[in-house]
Image 1: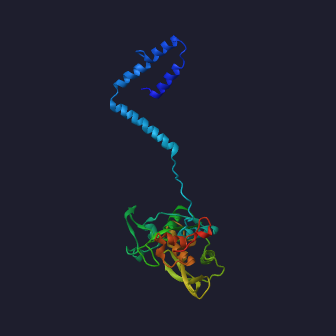
Image 2 (image 1 turned 45 degrees about the horizontal axis):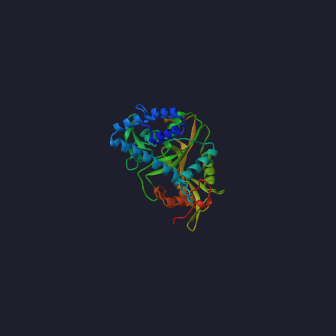
Length: 339
């Protein structure tokens, strides 16, 4: 059906053009004749049910009402600006610091899966079948296998070294930061934690190179020109000789001063890569040698930034992160307190 308002307008326009009897007759035939517009519309109207007429009119009125609201009403969907900013978690901050320092020493970053084969995690690293680390009270075993080998949640990032040595030929110079997993949970241990491990394989590297590399890293990370450091004999299946690295410190009140002092802090483990490990990845141990090291990211963060409990790293407490977090925009006021 035609819109009756449009029809009304059309009739008025036509009636305004009456100039003689002939134009009136034309108007009558067009609108009022048997086949005229009004007559045809009346016939169509008669065929409509009452419900259709009501529905049509209701839709028309609803459309008009909506149009009025759209023209007269507004909704402010903007939010007021906030004075608080997000912070970078200390773990993320320390990982970036470590990567930057070793990047300046020509190390590249390597990554690998967190679910590893028992072979890459233990066997290839010269770990005996009956080593305590293989027991279920130390390692999370996964109910899957790879090529007939059981899978585990990696207990260190050393499998990344294995994968890298299998893929490329020496010289190799890499660090492998990432999550690791062990069955442990107390003030200084967590079932999931972060490590960064380093590996250098070439024909000349030795313990003196290892010590020099670690000394540069520790001085840069702890921002000190003076650093008492010692190598203490130790044992790891994948290095020979092996050493624990201790650094000197002194305590003033509740603050640790890293670098100087007669007391010692264990900071990381290291050593020369065991020949068996090289042979397991098809590298000739008579031609190549190298060193490896590994350290905990959380431990580095706790020592540098005065965090006393490792478990707080994973509590998801925004107040804690605001206190210990780092500004991504270098805004000094971003760091608040725990209140």
